[in-house]
Length: 456
Image (cartoon, rainbow, N blue to C red; front, side, top):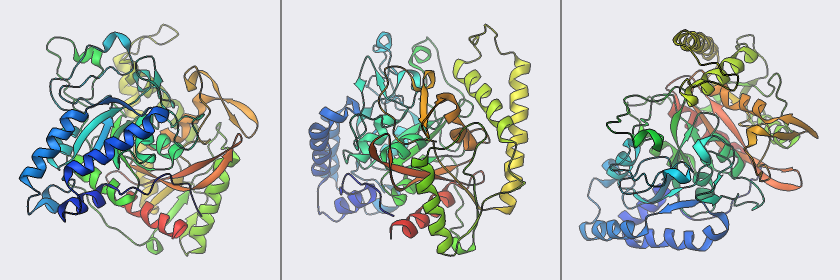
């Protein structure tokens, strides 16, 4: 099953290997990435905050020093140029989350993820575009403009890590780090035809990923990660995804790497209140059939699946409360401490139900979203509708497929599975592979094995 690929440029580990062997210099790798950005970004508009001059200086210093003998072990990304989502702090660079009145915020230090990436040898050459307040499945704002999908300029690359996915898909850079609370890594990966991973909540620190309005306040220090929201990588292959996750992880991860023939899968392809468009369901069914033909056990129903309607309702309440930090909702009601503890109790109960399910199953397969890349809108997606099987549906219902893994704090890897037609365009389609908490590397490994079955 083929899926559209826009570039044959090397990935992160391949680039690092070429640098270690002397095939290319760090400066050449950085120059090649910047040249690609200058060539493609006039149309794609993925890179919002370039940092080319410092990247060149860093590359020259690394070439003068040379790759350390233990680079493969301790600096696996030595010399690899990459970008990062605009919302992460990078010392000396602007972070405004799409707000014109916050463009005066310049980070005084690197976020934890950026520090880890730099320690692993990566060179940050810029930051990528986001929607205002990271709250849309598009990536446009009045500060940086609109990012387009490299597969079809009339379409969204997704959001809120849309600039991230577009930069990777178009070959500008081999890898990225984004964030996800409502599918903001998984949906861009799905829309743009790349790999993305929603990490187990708390695995990757989000220190230094704070709203600039808060970060500007005197004495502000973020002491915890926000509920539900995670940091996760995007790349063009599974191996790069795994190394990025290991670099970002605050704790060591286990990896069982079971062959698919020994795994039991559950496919969830229907969600009450949110049908899946044929453009997504057809390649999903083809992928599942290919797995079954290859001898993989895939169940289509289970009594262990939690009450998805209840899960979705509580997930939306928790996400909206967390993103608003308890501020009054549209009905004027402010969330109380009791409301928040009730949400935490419901989340814990839901996580327990999923843990019981994963006592029986190794992984769950599901669509990342009910549609493929959507045409550009002049308003936020979630204030509009989505066209699903010829009918307009409230766009908020589409968050069902994101919340499936987000609410119980589960990991989920999105891999490209094929292409399909949606509203007159041929576009990539992805599938998410969910697993139990802390099985992040196993999700990526399973997705990699699935990809080999589907694409050879």
